[in-house]
Length: 169
Image 1 (tube, one colour):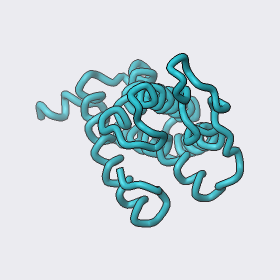
Image 2: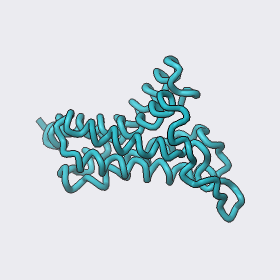
Image 3: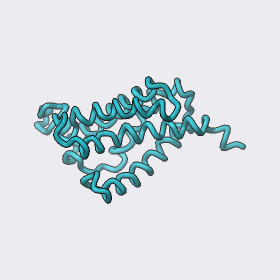
């Protein structure tokens, strides 16, 4: 009984996990399904003061729009308002762009692997954005972060085997 009192409603946790996965998988699926549509880098090729790409060519308008649209569509399917889906997508994309910015500063190539940095910002930021609306506590966020990191690594390998993803992260 102690465990159930630590966490929010399990169905809400599962629904948010589905949104996190949707927001992060949508750009990958969009790249596979629509390789030329919206394939414009968000940073339009801009470099930072260190003369490295601001974000890199893998962060595209297509991926951003795919995350926003797909996650907003998935939200009502999992029983949540569209606004929560959109908020999760925005947070996930902010986290993904922030991690790309940091990875470029560290010299990691676009689409390069950086365990933790690839998963934590894109899941933690949206969770913090919706924390009060979903009435999530620290245990909820810790559980969702852990589940997301594990599932993202498993799904990444599956997507690679199915040739949806170029690299197995």
